[in-house]
Image (cartoon, rainbow, N blue to C red; front, side, top):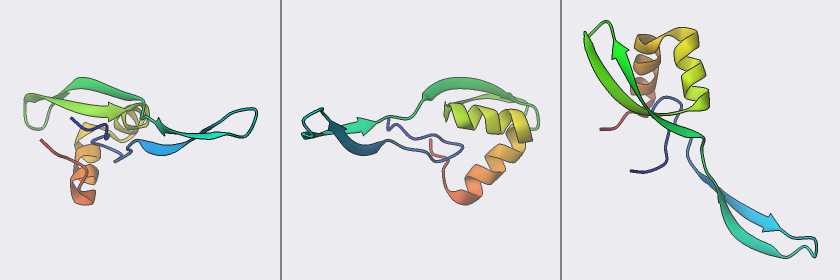
Length: 79
């Protein structure tokens, strides 16, 4: 399972650790990802999503149905 949010599409970025002597070593900035189950009222079923903290705030703000429609049209949903 890749570390990608199914609502916002956020994924891990790569960058560098920079030491005091300015030495650069590769590292990855992971997403704050949760595996959560949501009750989808419109379909009368439970669904499980990999959602970032920003995705949880989006669901709380606009609702699960609208967030899923928005993610589907942007192509972020996967099984």
